[in-house]
Image (cartoon, rainbow, N blue to C red; front, side, top):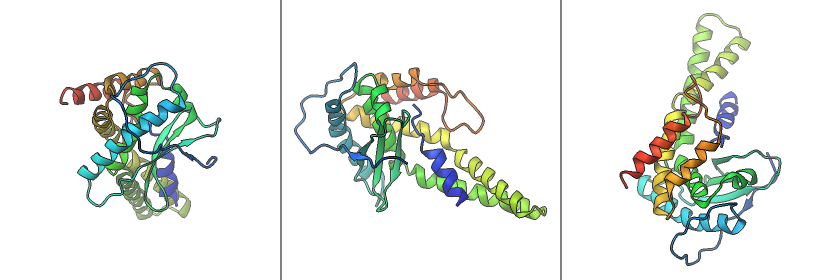
Length: 235
């Protein structure tokens, strides 16, 4: 249980940038004109248009880069007005990938390029299998922590504490590299959906910079922006 709790906490705030049941905001398939970036406040219609462009590209990349993975993305909005600005990737009970956006995040993005980049980033976590990989490293860390303390005669409470610490260390061992992987593939997805990922990555200039903290879950914002720029140079 401890591993599940730790993983849920570590993965639920991916963008940083429960609740009432999410509302499925995925639009019906429809013809789309040439991609046009839009600045200013992002409307409900803008969100639907970004979904219509990004979702098929993300699903195509998913099918091309994975074998046997569920690539049928479901994109939903968390409508709780008290929920902080955030977006995250999860799996529903059937294993279908779900991308959730809070209304606060949708209000925070300044243009459709930013929204498309965040959407591509979250889809990339699923494509790269980050949830499963994080779970595995968390479990390994928890087991090692528990075994080490048990070996020196620790009691049940001390062993449980060591397991929790081990799960945290394990889960975060690769979290920064996972974020950069998602930024890289998210750039590809947003670009092929017709958006400007470099302009989209400007979102990082307005959120708190986590810096390069030991066991931090996210890399420095400047490193993330540079990853987007380097990826764009190859496209």
